[in-house]
Image (cartoon, rainbow, N blue to C red; front, side):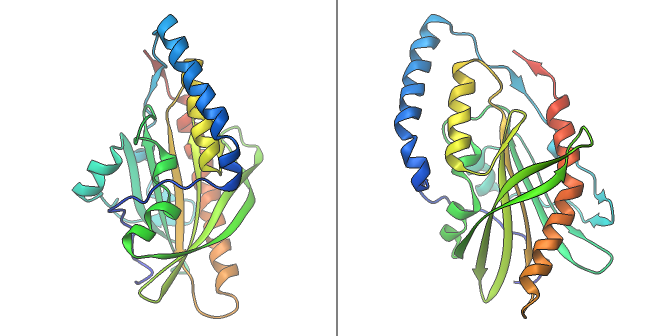
Length: 243
């Protein structure tokens, strides 16, 4: 796969929670049961919010984006996204980083980010993945402040091409690295009739051979996210709620 390759999701793998996620399964069940009971007493729905993630600019600092790539019809049917952007960005040194943001107005059932992560979906498409743990990045947000944001790091390999991938979740105006955190927040917000919108942010780049390949890839992903995160945070924070 060349450095210009985009990652297409065509099938789903079963959701597997991390050990820490298993520990909260009982809590999630209790929250869900309480939510069902509370809904009978108060059937008001959570607000509907639409964040126009597909309006993120083709020009992000020194990065120039190409034409946004569309999802194949099978992927659209599976994901049921409300908004998304898939675009390859290139810097002046010809480094390519692929950006994908998938977004749902209301997350529930299969229409939620935690069930459509690279670590779950890529193996179903023939990829071998290696989990590298998490990394805490210092990124600018919409208010101009640098804040810590924790991301998942995996290496995906197919056809002898290896890619470094960062991903994390958005839920309402909050950000999480773990699938179980995303699921828990959706359940809690639905219970309290708060925003249940959200999605997943992924950036990826091909790993170059040699001892510096990983370090170069890490720097490239950080540089693009430094441009993406404040714009995404502004779109999320400024979205209007409707019922």
